[in-house]
Image 1 (tube, one colour):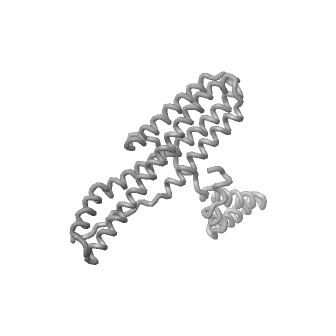
Image 2 (cartoon, one colour; image 1 turned 90 degrees about the horizontal axis):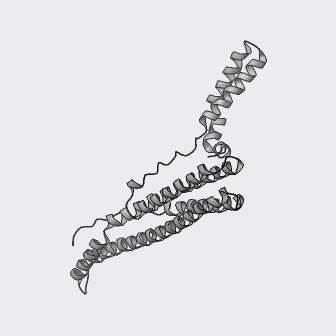
Image 3 (cartoon, one colour; image 1 turned 45 degrees about the vertical axis):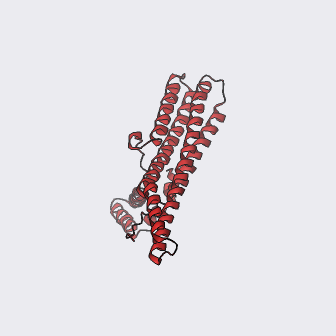
Length: 246
């Protein structure tokens, strides 16, 4: 988070209006006045500002990217991204020192942020797959067949409720599987795009490609990954419904 983003937050506003911080500033002013009025004012303002800064939220914690915490295909996507990141860093290190190399390093740092977004997407995709496994569509379909057979042509109210419950869970599983597939396709596309951008970095490093255009393309990919992450995080995992046998 940039300083501006950290400043304009509820936590910072609460700190600014805190009577405790104001009281501390007053105490600082009073203590400083014993030395000199100017010292008192400076001490009070400084103490107040330092207290507000300390109360400001820090940036989000750095995500530790560990592909081995994921199942396939999510692990593969993250590993591909890590390999692309290493190739890009190698290109930056091999570039001649100067403003262009510094610019490439900044671009590589931004792309690394995109890798963090990709890992979050992959982690969420893995969680969605786990939710589908917990729902166990195969067992649900078997259960549905059994219930429908037991219900016959004149199902009881209990049978109807149980059948509706199983169908609801199956519908949830199907929706989650569809989202998992779509998310995997999006990550596969961004992986291909990432490989393309890494290959283009060599052209930028030797001055045969425009760094501004390259930087915009990298920003676009990172924003695409951030948007995908936001969308996939909003997916609700349905509870597994238990119902008595009938």
